[in-house]
Image (cartoon, rainbow over the protein chains, first blue to last red):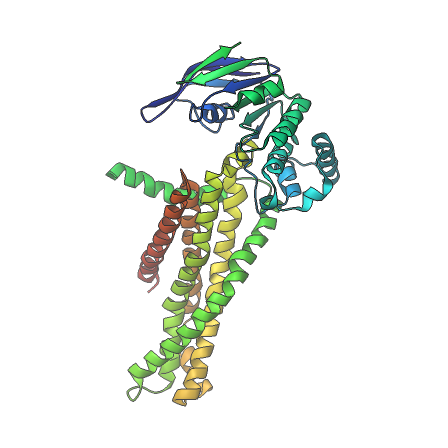
Length: 203
Length: 247
């Protein structure tokens, strides 16, 4: 469970998040908002990258998070394979064989080809970058996923493909976007609008 | 910037490299990345170190001969060139080469990674960016700077000796006699202590400003400038402090 209680974040004179509270249990929720409305700030607060000025974020025991950043945040000097297995190599004691098996499972799940693995990330297309970012985020089997504009800058076919992948994963979490079409493609029922620092549920 | 802010900034800067050393992760993975950095910072710096050393050797021999010719015996050429290069020129210039080539690259690379959220991605994956990115770079620059200092020392003195033989009819044995009589081991090891200290703080400077970047590409440019300026000033200040302590 992820619970936000009265979270407020202020940058300079601008109140980006104003007393926001919500609880996330076991579904994927969507937060819609215009550019600069504070969606990314909210995700960064949930993931612990930013601290709220007031209020708190409570994550239940052994809650792990996976995060897909707006611009994928891949390490361009590494290959696709090195990017995907990085969290396992650095934070677990899994054997090479276990890591390989997990990698193969992820590739299968996301329908990614093996030949992509040896490519450097700076040679990938926008859609491929997002898929690799998703692969890297889910390889540790997180309890929740945080998606920051997962389809921004992608053409309609790739958007369709990415939303199909996210839907297939069925991992609960938070998806923020400025694009209502994405929420409809994902068939997310619980939707919020972030505007002027306020989070309001929309029907 | 008021006094408290300046003090806070200086404290942060001084503490930063120690926090990098203390960052924890898998040691084996750090060693793998360390070798990559040793290659990138060390091997790829060698051509520039060679060029700098060759011209340093030529200039310092010409200038020294001009000062002592007709007044002092020829072996003083080896003695003066050797001491100048060992005590001052090799450590300072190898530090400046590392600053221009690698410290700037570190600030730019880390800064760019920061603005493209790669550091955030590491944190979400529970990987400390200081352990993953900074530790191997800092270790590499601390290891490689004294080695480059040694290379510069060798090449400069060799070029100086050859030039002296060819143009000033100073036999190699006379040049090397001056170099080693009287031989003071302290001069030799202070040269390496100096370059190790320079490497540590120059590396710290590049990493610190890289990690501090907030904003966009303009800030990355500023970070590179700040890293180079700080590292250059630090080399000069630390050079003075080491001279004060050891001589």
